[in-house]
Image 1: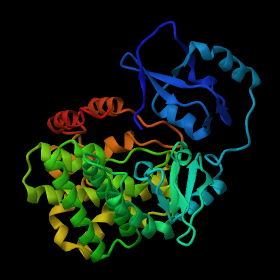
Image 2: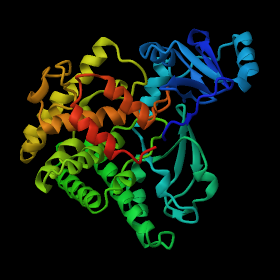
Image 3: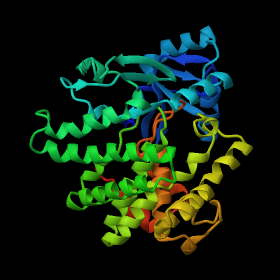
Image 4: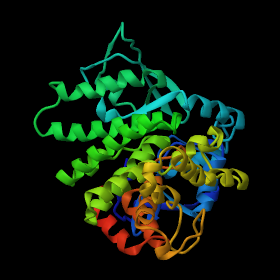
Length: 413
């Protein structure tokens, strides 16, 4: 979800020192950051302020934050109490290890794909701030009706991993439903391509050497390209709306959509766009061998963890070279999506034109999607803020490609 902005109003906002926030408390008022003359929601009311959140502020050098003037009394009460809650799962190694395990047993679904008044043959769970709760109980023998109350819930909607085939059947039946009429059919068709892509990528991460899953991925990438070439606005329907946690399969599909969209905007031919799309979709395939405790960690990785995480690039290259050699022309999107034009990237410290076009495109798409994805310890950045940050990283990204990318995303708010 895009971060909201408010116009400047010097009488409506009060600044305060970020050091006044208390680790272990729940913030019961919105907190804002000032960006380019606008106030951006940084933390929503109800956010847990943890050690990880504090480190995030320090890392971004956010020393001065803002509250609405109407929240002054609440803020003063918060400071005067000085209480701390019990340790959060964000800061508890054991609790987080349990969460990382549980996360692998669930699959994130998109709320947009659920229609009130339709039957689900699978149970749906709610997840926010690492807390799981039942949202809808259903089985093939006892289906349940999806209603507006479920769809109004905040947080991620999840299903059990074992119920993915049932969800797959549900979304592919949507186009035949009376709920989808006229112009909505094109929009829903793009959304179904997106959801099917997420399912295939999720399966591929379980079995990265599967030739059959690669074939299915190629079909979906081709469908994605056709959708965008037929209607440039389809890119917005192909992108997943951000939830409350990071999922590698969702990120992989978003990076593919953004990369393909940029390739089409650059007038790449169909063959090259296909190769770019496959490389972008599989750019993180090497993460299939990264331990889940590191992959799912919600905070800054320590030096050793970061070195392990960096190996996903070489591991991805190894998987493709050993099992999917026909994708050799797509490989640079996998091997170079963390390279920087300045030479400060990894794993090869490539510079400037030593980075291929596919590598430069995927690097922009990967960074943008990471910045605009909500994490439990921070709100997603708005497209404007994310692009501003990328643009300020002078010398790291191809400026000519970035200009086209910004124009391409002109309608995203």
